[in-house]
Length: 355
Image (cartoon, rainbow, N blue to C red; front, side, top):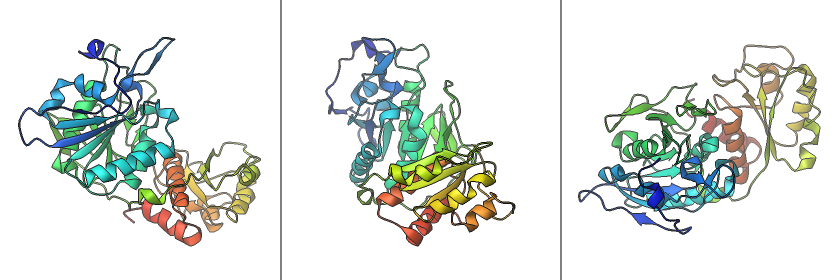
């Protein structure tokens, strides 16, 4: 159990805390708590629920005061699966406003279920070169071996590191530093749950310092004020024997785009090719892969339903973006009002930033 949690009272929704730094001139960090397992304790019913605020979390890790002066805000107290685009747009606006000031970086605390998605959205919406770190915990605050305190401390170290500047939004857990575009949750229960299978982690936190071994090319940033409307994008995984009967109903259900998670390097059953091609006449269709690592190909296979066939019929390749992140990017671009070739070009620039 975290050392001081039993002494912490329930803070108000908008409570803020500024911890006095150990010495003058320490960097300032903004900590934004959204909820998640890291904030969960036993409730009145079965199981743990979000109860702690960002201020509570900071008070429970005294070593943070040796790293930075921390201001904690708690705009939401939600489990990760309940976060929405609207929540993340609000967080992005707050970060853009505050990072333009005197803070050195920011930490966003939330549930690990959707950390890879939140990190990618913030990477698309938050500009500048100051680090934005997304972190959480796999074990609740009262659990033996709770990992939240160590993750918060490592995140603060990275958020104040000059070496972490210019890398966009990062995910830091288990002393490992991941780029938002590559990170994936790989285990339902291990503290080492996050992996970057397509690119590898960028670095580690070692002996109180951020060690960056790899650097990534940031994609363009969408102004968060330009993504003000939610645009529903369907995410469908292709499977053996799939006949595509769900596809025809997507426009009537109000969807404005589709990401198809194809097999292998971008293949689908021949039976659904015509349905996918028909949808490209109605809204953008992105070709991704259901495989955890590697890009969608462009010109290797030539059979019906191959990547060459599908791209020739108007589908947009997602590069190394998996289905979850390709869906987020497409929704953000649609929300910004992009259509047709402009949307396609913008998607390709952001999905393939080093191309």
